[in-house]
Image (cartoon, rainbow, N blue to C red):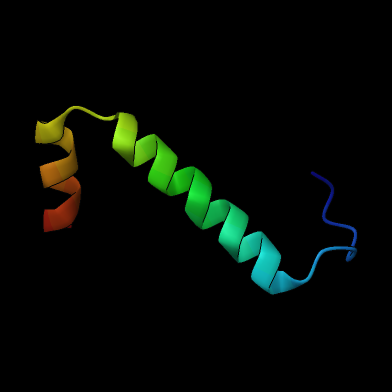
Length: 38
C-alpha cells in the first residue's frame, strides 16, 4: 500500500484496525488476555 493520498484516512484506519484484529486473533489466549490488561 502506498500512502499517496488516494485512500481516505478512514479507509487506512479501517485497514490498520482489521490487520491488528487479525493478528490478535492468531495469538494464544494467554497473550490476548495480556493485551486486554494494557
